[in-house]
Image (cartoon, rainbow, N blue to C red; front, side, top):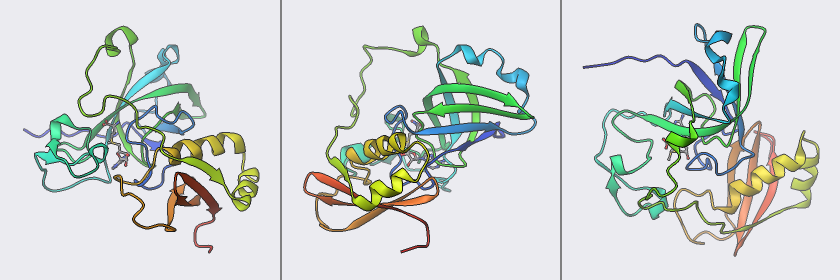
Length: 236
Ligand code: SAM
C-alpha cells in the first residue's frame, strides 16, 4: 500500500546546510525559523486556536536525506558514529519513511495579506524542509518526565568555550540583533557541531557552516573555539 502526502508548508531556517544543525529541537532557543503554509493550506481559519499553545509538533520530510534503500541499523553521531543501533531505536534521518518529528516553540501565529506563518524557535530543521503536519503540544499527554531515553539520556554536554575574533565581533555588530546572533553561534559551536567526535586530529583546521546569508568560519584550539569571521559567500 502506498500513501501519498503533500507538504502543507515549508520551513524558513537559518540552517542552510545539514552540517552543524543541532541533532534535536529545543537545544538552541535562539534558532528561529518560520513555517510558511503553502496553498491551499494557507487558510487563516486552519490556524485559529493555535495561538493558545506554546509549542507545536512538526512532522516533516528529511528531504535532503532521501535514499532508494534503507538499512535496519544506523550509527548515531551521539554514540561517536562507530556503534550501531536499530533504525527504529534512533532519530536518524535515514529511515524507511524519511519523516522527522520535532517539538518546537511557537512564538507567534501570523495571518496577514494572504500569508499564514508560524514563527518558531528552537528548530533543528534545514531551510526549505517540507512540513507534512502541525499539531499542538499538549503537556499532560506529551510530557513524560520519568521516561527512559536509551543512549541519549541527556542533552549534549558543552565541550568548548567560544570566543570571537576582533573581525567576527565587528561583523556581528553590523547585523541586526547582534547579541541574539552571538548567543546563537555560541550555543551552536560549544557542543561541538562536528558530525561525530573527531578528536583534535586536524589542529588548526578551519571549519565552516552556512548560516543565514553568511559562512561562519571557526577553528579549534584545545578546549576553545575561535570564531574567525562571518564571511560573505564567495569572498575570501
Ligand atoms: N527532531 C527530528 C526527529 O527526531 O525526527 C530530527 C532529528 S535528526 C537526528 C536532526 C538532524 O536532521 C539535523 O541535525 C540535521 O542535520 C538533519 N536535518 C534537518 N532537516 C533536514 C532535512 N530537511 N533533510 C535532511 N536532513 C535534515
